[in-house]
Length: 570
Image (cartoon, rainbow, N blue to C red):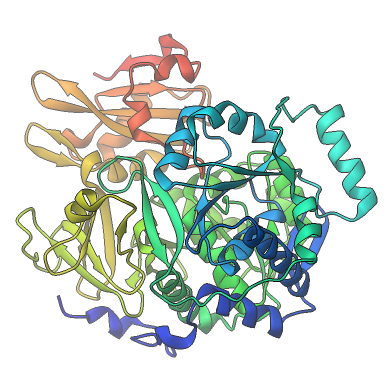
């Protein structure tokens, strides 16, 4: 496929990037800390850390880790929300020559056991609020020997730390009891490491930096291997793309998505670290009132999120009072951006939200809409510099422009494979080295990519393909709808039928109104035959609606759904 997308590139954006600019993420980190030493790097709950402080703290923690006698390439897990210790731990682990295993703090015992054993993690840094899960899991994780426990306020000034941690533990009682005799505190490791020598570790693009666990394109939880080269490349690709906005060290980026998610890790933590920006960490974005109050206090210039996050903010009564005059960039990824949300965002903030696309396996950014775009175009954007896109049919042949097929990707940001899974790796790569995404898309004459849907989520009604994203976009435009998820359910006559799962904004909204709205905009076989109203929809840790869970038989009970709300459409 010819690279027609180059013609749409903004002035100054290169066709290719120089991946040799940094030999590793550590080199990138150290240069940023040197250039921006006095500037605030991370801010959380009213406490700031400068680049110089992050440099010193990560150096001390790295030296402590090396004293444990772990070999280069050892895996160390981080199990925390967005708090100041997170970036310190990331850069310390990398500086010590080890591999970061990002871990969702909301994991159950079984999920944690699987990830720790699969990765072979030998140490974990965990927030005390979740240490009880680690305690319950330890008997089944024989290789996990070193437990480092931290509390939210550990990097706050002394008096604030003591008061904050005491309130969390004794007043709010947010730390379930746990007992891990050999665990050490995070602050103890910093003191010990300060007295120790940090030995230089030679790192290059081929060394592994992160194991990012994902269901991937085949649904089985596995670790995507992301090298220093993968992530350095993606940072440079993203930086070159946003450079026309004249981004500087004065930028303030709001990080609501968890840093253990690849979108937030690369876009917020790494790319804006290169710029020298201030990163505001939101530890609990589900507390929308606190979230909105936090951003009201800042003159933020950049915000990243998923469609549901933007939708939630728009529906909060205080959000309209936020000062948007400094906002340069709102970036959406992780799931399809709904047109209704995009239009409301522009109306409220006077600034567009740009849709991007990526995968854990691609570090993650693959395509982004150009910075000059002023309104919703339904596209996931143009391929980034040094990125090749091939759209192929089920036989692996490239399809014509405008025809839908599976998106396949090649570029320096693409993982070398899955951790200890050569069989799974072989499945997702073509013979000529492209990563098969499992996503259905098409390219228009100008080179813009339009995501149709996940291959596995496609609904087949009497032989006709129905893509849930398209139906969700239409239903999402109805003013009475707050959230929407569309799935296929078994039907004896047609094979499958379309079901719409809706959280209402207007309590009076009926299934008949939804169906009537759909019939105005969709052909008959795409119109939902079932409409079900829910109190809430199941979401991933970053707020992406889980279609698979919507199809599970036991979801009704878990979501506390009123069974009377199940209404078949005529």
